[in-house]
Amino acid sequence: MKVLRLSYPLVIAGLLLILIEIFSTTPSTATLESPKPRFIYVPDDYSSIQLAVDNANSGDVILVREGVYVENIMIKRKSDLVIKPVGGDTVIVRAKDEGQPVFSIQFSRNITILRLTITGGKAYRSAAIYILNSSNVFVQECTLYSNNAGVWIAYSSNITITKSNVLGNNYGVIVQYSKSTIIVENNINYNGIGIDFVDASNNTIYHNNFINNNQHVRLHKSVNKWNAQYPLGGNYWSGYDAEDVKKGPSQDEPGADGILDAPYRLDDDNVDYYPLAQPLAFQIVIATPIVAVVTRTLTPLAITVTQKIFCDECTAALILLVVAIILIGYLVAVQIKARKKSPATKTKSKQRYTTLF
Picture 1 (cartoon, rainbow, N blue to C red):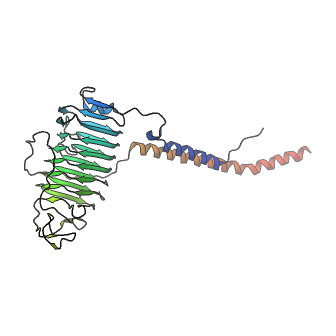
Picture 2 (picture 1 turned 135 degrees about the horizontal axis):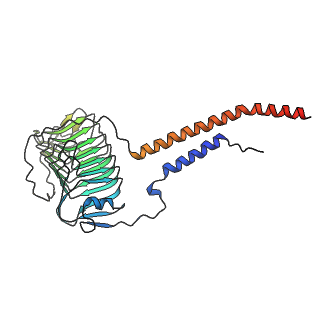
């Protein structure tokens, strides 16, 4: 009886092909036809923003009618989703649980939060918008006030905050272990710390008004860009007194240009080379009267992050890879053992053959 022997290099190659197929298969490459984008109305179609998010598909737009919505919204493993008011309606989202973020965006991509007023995420480690392990998230034309943090970004990339009011929070914006964040054309005012960078470099911040924060910026192991090219300029920093009597890229030509002649130095590695002489006049509409925002002394809480968060998908992939390596090792060991036995088997067969004849 013949025994079929498989070459272990072929077995290994086959297993590797299977692994490649597993890892390369994503929702974007699926052959099933994706549902067509929909407009989902709150509260018409669903009574809450959270229910609308839970039932949304990629590409859907959630339109929220005027009102105050008291809830904490989790956006997890979603993509290509927009949440905004209907037309010019005023929508206020207030935390139901002050110990949790009002909006929590996790393991998601291409999410847009537009023209919402968000408040109430007041507890330590809470925020109006918390972004974790996500990419291409846009916070635009929002008002974020009276939170522990206006926007808290961790382990993410390509996050954009623009044309928003970030007012009266312990932290205006926190950026941790993230890159390619763009913060442009915002009012970052009356916060304990305007922006707090922790191990977050290669981010861009310009054309913002930093006004009456206890500390405009705090930096830890972070190097970022703080201005656009001349003559667009950098940011406005309240409390920074310098002359504006020169102009030009090097600020060495006679004549004022709206840019202060001396750079605003945050530290040796972070410099706004073109600080603005006057605050920028943004056309940002505050959707609701904000009575709670006053000049006050805030004591920012120390933030310590000791460990990076590993996503569920990465853990599953790692487990599969380890199992595959163990299986390959086992097959190799079996093949080697079989080859060691084969000479003895041939000798025994030869002896039997000689005995018969």
